[in-house]
Length: 297
Image 1 (cartoon, rainbow, N blue to C red):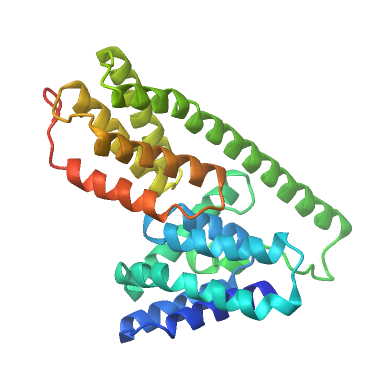
Image 2 (cartoon, rainbow, N blue to C red):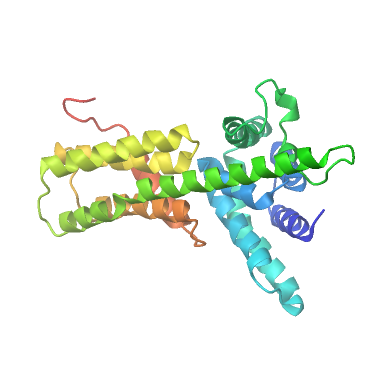
């Protein structure tokens, strides 16, 4: 096992040792450690985890640790202190994640991550449709060695296939990021205007609500749950403001801006702690869930 995996697994273990865990939670921690140990591409798997609401906050912490280990020149003399720091700030988010999961739901979540990668590979011709599900584990997605019996032609063919997959995937995410971020600044400006007491036109509120609805549905289809949820909250709140079922006071505006901040941070992969924004946005979403939009709900 490589150093990065070992470090992350030991951080998780150290954090878990600071919690009073039930048997079920201990099993979830064991499954998490096993998933990391078996991951063929830990960086990509952490990114996938960030897209799932129940894992997202914890995954953001893991991503900070991963980036520290892979993008910085390590100071060996301070490594022990950094390890203590990393394991300490995993405790709260690990505890919160474990409160929302049991072994069955966590296993189902891991399968969603695996299936999302499988979908990309199948759509690009990487694997045939008749591959059995049990073979599609995380180890499937990275070639670590080439068997001697493969011909030079086969090796070159596989190399070309995987290179093309990466280019197409990068292109997809660039287009996705551009489309998702396009309305963010105009909506932020609209919210700032509302915060001063100015009125927004119904047409503008309708237009932005529709954009949020469409982008949210698109995000849900490609498995970006946390981004989809933030869009849904924004779409509904804009329509509620339009029909005057929701007054755009300071708290409401800040909660809606929290949704925007989470979207931008997750899409751009910002290495910042957005826990407070995420909690505020999700709490706001629960608050407006029961409100009805006249003529729609």
